[in-house]
Image (cartoon, rainbow, N blue to C red; front, side, top):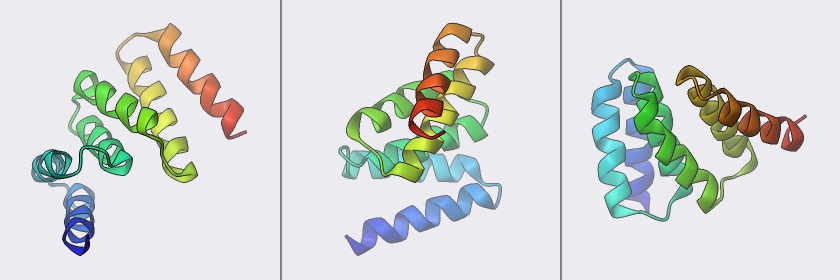
Length: 106
């Protein structure tokens, strides 16, 4: 869908330019339109992390990973999720996810 791709580019641009809250709103609307799109779940998680909403980011990362991501995005999602768990003080879960990432992407 060209419209979806345009919205994805716009949301990434918003996040990169420092307007992560507007990006978050756009990601959430994209999830309503395409709930099976793993990349949108991943980007939504990433944006929540940028906003300091680590706890809220976790289920987005988990769903993105569950749905299946391309290799580069999967590496980023595992690193993001592991780092988020570490930030939340969930060190066992952080180690588990980061070790999974190191095994898949040495």
